[in-house]
Length: 268
Image 1 (cartoon, helix red, strand yellow):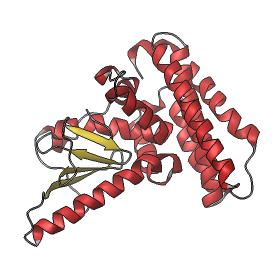
Image 2: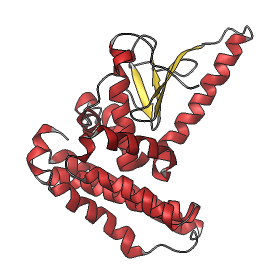
Image 3: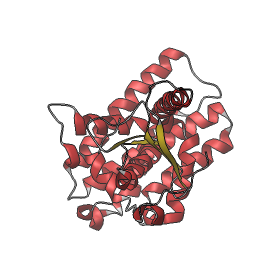
C-alpha cells in the first residue's frame, strides 16, 4: 500500500464490498448468458474499472484512494467468482472470489504467504487470463524462436527462464519477444526481461499481483496510463505505484547475481 494511503487502509474493505455489490445483486445465472449480454457486461466492467482507477489515482492522499483500490479488488473478485462458477462449479467460484477479495484486507497483502497464494491462484482466475493468456502466447513464440536457434536458424534464443515460487510468476529472459524500450514488461503470470536486467523482476512480479488482485482490465488501463500519450506518465502511473506497494524484493539468488532455479504490455 502506498505510504500516503496508509492512514486510510481501513477504507479498502468497504470499497471491496462496493465493487462486489453489483455482481452479487445481478445474481449468478446457472449457465452463461447470450454473447450479447456477456459483451454488454464486459463493456460495463471496463467502464467500472476505468472509473475505479481514476478515483484511486486522483485520491492517493485521502480515503477515496483506498476506497477506489478496494472497489477494483471487489469487482474483480465478483467477476472471478461468477466466471469460475460457470466454468467449473460454485465451490471453485467462492474459493477464487475469497482469495481475490482478501487482497483488500489491511495488512494481509504484506504477508508473504498471502502473496504466494494470490500469485499462484492467478493462473486459474479468469480475470487474470486477459493478461496471462497474451503472456502465454508470447512465451510460446519465444519457445519456437529458441527451438529455431537450436536447429541452426538465425533467430534469438531464450537466455534464461525463472520461476518465482514466492509469486508463481515465470520470467523469460531473451527470445524473439523482448522489451525494446524498457528493461522488462509483464503480462499477468508471465514476465519478459531484457538480458542482464534481472533486477526488474520483483517490480514486474508486483504487476503480476496487481493482475491477480484487480484483473487484466486494470492491467491494460494502467499500461495506457503509463505509456500512451497524452497520459504517458511513466513511473508516476497509478498501476506503477501499486506494483511497488506489494513490497517485493529480489530473491537471494537474484540479489547475488546467480540464476534462480527453474522448472522448466507492461514496461518498467
